[in-house]
Length: 231
Length: 211
Image 1: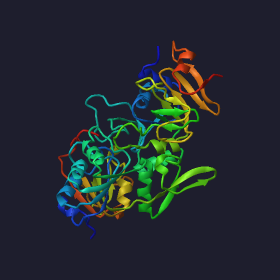
Image 2: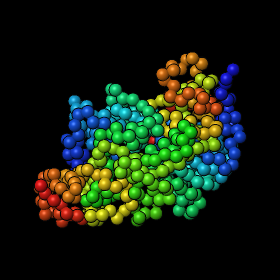
Image 3: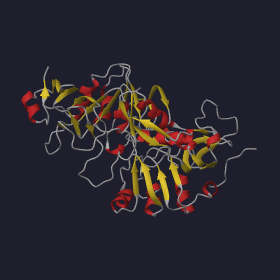
Image 4: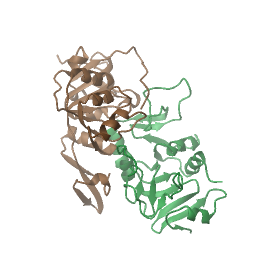
């Protein structure tokens, strides 16, 4: 029997190694796997490379992980928020590296890794500062930049529902980076609100087939809990 | 009287025809949606994978799982759909967005856009989806104040700030005028009420042509 459901957040994060590249889903706080991020803080892995759209808010979650000195480098499109104090001070002090990547290029680099494509060309960033150090090439008279696939050792994602095969259904705008990141890591860990019986999730609703998912943990927050301030 | 921010958004919205799929950036661009009349069907796409945004939620009707690119709470229009980020940006990069509206630090007379980084602040650069939109949308319109807070022109011969995209801006809506970006450079479309061509030219850093 296939059963990817684990019983605790600690079990879900067991074995994450120092130096890992960790893909972290979410856009602002929506679809962000905050319980798994807290779990990673507890778990203790360090020297991490975090790949995520935003660089954390306040002093919790990803910001806390960075404040504890556990993140060596972030790969990010928009390291700004209503309260980016932790990232900005670490960045100014030279204590964290930043690779800034256009948002769509970030998503496509991750998708490429999940789809077995080592690199691709995009017009995004052609002729700009973010082209520097990359190969550029013309196709049909237009300039394109070569971007490399971006693979994770671990992906931390959030979905609304799962079954024991690891099939995932998202809620609202909570899919965002989660489905593409699920494809692109050696160990994909999902936190979900609800575990459903196998066969209960409608096949048309499953955006992430369980083939991409290795561990599922239910985080019970009492039904339709309201997320903290969107950032 | 020059246009207010809301009037700039309304002026731009008047030029958006029924049927377009439109991506709105953060700030004044987001206000454009408020000025498209409900009977004119325009599909608003948000880069975080929402296709078909509705108006802002009424008090008590907020859904914390529904946000736009600016992380503001939204509603869905009838016919709305969701995709993940890879598909959302495939839609953007693949030329399926009829119009993208962005703010800007500078627009050059050749259509170059600078709107993501200034050399003046020491905060980390943040590009978000601006470069993808500049490269991928079918047309890009900028809505912005005509000058900086200290009076420097934002319409320029060449951008001084790092570029977001090259030769990508087609039209600019400011508090003073609507201006097309053409092979000849900036060409006036119309002036805000009470603004003179002389005033417009005095506050611009590049030639403003007339038809």
